[in-house]
Length: 122
Image 1 (cartoon, one colour):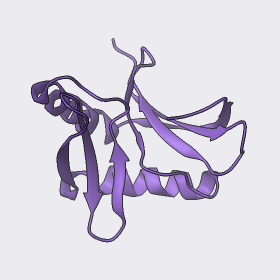
Image 2 (cartoon, helix red, strand yellow):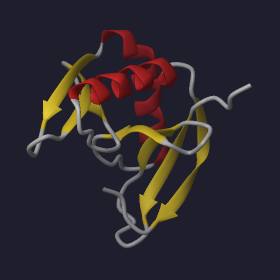
Image 3 (cartoon, helix red, strand yellow):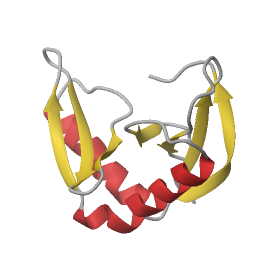
Image 4 (cartoon, helix red, strand yellow):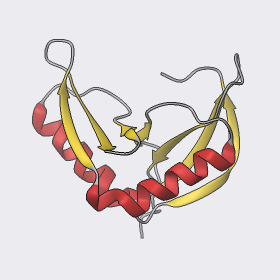
C-alpha cells in the first residue's frame, strides 16, 4: 500500500522568517507548496486546513512562464493564491496532470506538526 501524502512545514535557516508548507508524497516528491510564508506554525497549519476544506471550490490557473515552462496555482476570492506548483513543467499536459495529483492528494493528506529548518526554499 502506498504511503499517503503529507504536509510538511519548513522555515528558512538563514532568515528564520515565517513558516511554509509543502505537500509531499510518500516518496518525498513535492506536489505543491504555500504561495508565501506564514507568521508561525499555527497560522500555517490553519492555512493548510482551510486549503483542505475549500479544495473543491478553489479556482485553478495554469500559468505560462518563461518560454516553454508551465506552473499552476490555486486561489480563492478571500485569500488570493493559496497554493502553487513546486516546480515548472515543460508541457501544458504535464502541469495539468500535476495539478490534478495535488488536488487528489491534498484533501486527505496528513499534517506533520513539526517545523524543519532548511537552507533555502524557492
